[in-house]
Image (tube, rainbow, N blue to C red; front, side):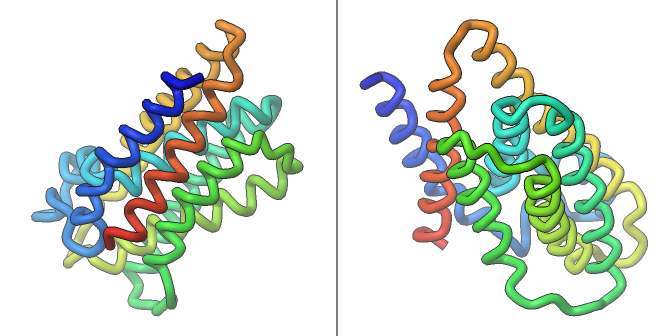
Length: 194
C-alpha cells in the first residue's frame, strides 16, 4: 500500500511541469496534419490522464461501458472539434478539460457505480471539451488532424482498458483505483500549476 501511495505522489509531482503544455499551443500543432494529430494526445498530461482514466473507469464499471464509454469520448471529441472549427463560441472549455482529469480520476478512485448512460453523458461532455479546444485552435484545413487525434485517443483508451483488465486478472482492483487517484491528483497539480 505504501508503494502505491508513493507511486501516485511521484506521478502527480512528475506531471506538474506538464501544465506548461495546457491549451493553447501544444507542440505539434504546426500544419495540423495526421501525424500532428497522432502525436498531440501524447504531448499533454491533461489528455493522457483523462483518456486513460476513461478506460480504467470503464473496466471497473464493466459490461457495455467497456466499449460505449471510449466510443462516446471519441465521438464527442470529433463533434467538439467540428464545433470549435466552426467558430461557435463555448465558454469555460479549459476548466472543463482540467475537470475531466480530476473528475474521471476521482470516479475511478471511488469505484463509482454510475449507470452506463450517466457515465456516457459525462464522458461525452468531457470528450467534446477536449475536441472543441483543438478545433478552435486549428488553422485552415485540418482534415488529417482530427483523424490522427481520434486514433491516438483510441490508443490511450486502450491503454487504460488493458491496464485495468490486466489488474483485474491479477485480482488487484485496488490498484486500478489508485491509478485513478493518481490521475485525479495529477489533474489537481495541473490546475494549481496552470
